[in-house]
Image: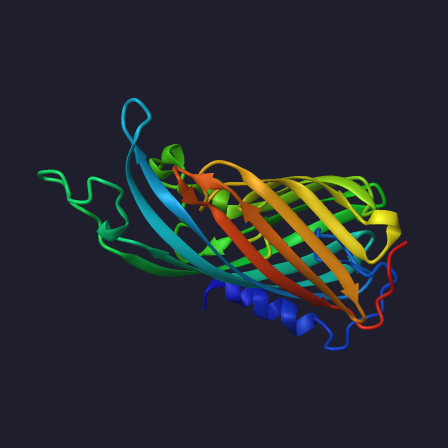
Length: 270
């Protein structure tokens, strides 16, 4: 059995089915340690493009791509500000073939137009989080079936991408007003800004709404785009929407996702 699946099953086996009451009902905006078990589910969709450029930077070709991704996260505190968790998800990529080329529409002599590619990539990401009142830090490892797609010209030329095997985050400041950087921690992975996000957010007036504004970059997108997240407490649920807005070589490089986290009797953080 795959090592990542073993870790997932092991964590689920020690996670109580009744979720423990916690005073600081977390939202979907950031990765934090709650005073009880967290369960989160998220899904999203979007599109990007592989852009080819000539020596002078002119666009010579473009292959459009669309994706759908989904993820689930379970996190369990173990005391002293430390929590253990696991994310597991799937990325479905549909990369167009020659029909997505920009003019000239016909291949040049001797040119081979790549065929359409449709792939599924399952991944499992066990991690730990250490949190104090002034911030938090997290680190994990990502097992994945195949390499994650990346549209950046430089990254595409690399034989492998070892940084995609790691996940982590650094948050400075309390939940009410913070600055954070995250790598490979998106929920879901691509729709939630991209593999890398950086920016600031908080909980206005200590109320039930959370916001995040920053930049999202990294595969599958080329370049940086605007990353936005909004979450709100709704009874026992925390519901959030996250988007990534951008363009690459005249093509959309965008994503949008929806997530929900369940925490019975969770109260709002003030």
